[in-house]
Amino acid sequence: MNTIKKFSIALCVSASLAPAYIQAQGMSSHEFGPKAGDREFTLSGAGTSSKDFDNGTFGVSGDVGWFLSDQTVAGVRQSINYASVDNGDDVWNGSTRGYVDYHFGRHQARPFVGASLGGIYGDGVKDTGIAGLELGLKYYVLPSTFILARAEYQFLFDSGDSAEDNIDDGAWAYVLGMGFNY
Image 1 (spheres, rainbow, N blue to C red):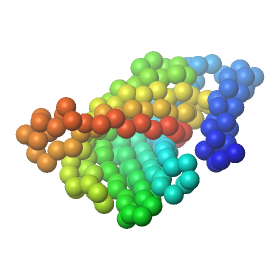
Image 2 (cartoon, helix red, strand yellow; image 1 turned 45 degrees about the vertical axis):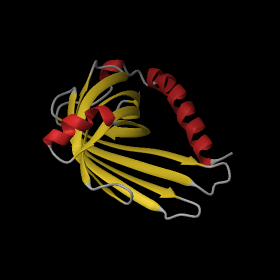
Image 3 (cartoon, helix red, strand yellow; image 1 turned 180 degrees about the vertical axis):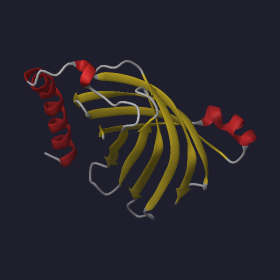
C-alpha cells in the first residue's frame, strides 16, 4: 500500500474516532476552535504520479495565521511545488500570499470564505502577482486540531488592468491538510 493511501486511511480513522474521544472526555462543541488572539498553523499537501512513477508532481503548503476575532484569521501562506519530468527538465515553483478568512459558526465543522494576494515565482512560470478567492471547511477532531479542505480560485496579474483582464482565465487549486490553533 502506498504512503498516500496509508496516510488517507489513518486520517479517516482518526477523524471517525475523535467524536467518541471527545464525548468520553465530556467536552462540548463550544470548546472547539480558536479565540481572538490565538494563532494557527496548517500543513497541506498534494501530489500526482504516472502509473510507472517516471513523471510526477508534489506540492506542500504551510499557513501561519492570527485570529483577529473568534471567526476572522489573517496570515501568510507559502506554497512550493515540484515536478519531475521524464526526458525533460525538472521544475519547481512557489508562491507567497497573504490571506484573510472568515469562519461561520462555532462548532466542530466550520466552513469559511476568504481572499489571498501575493506573488508566484519559479521555473515554468513568469514571476508575477497572484490573487484569489477561497472557500473551505475546517473540521475540529480535537479542541484545537482540525482537518482542512480548501479550494482557491487563483488568477495571475502584472497590473491592475491585467488583473481585470485575467480574472476570467484563472485556475482552481485544492489542498487537504491538518492544522492546529495555539
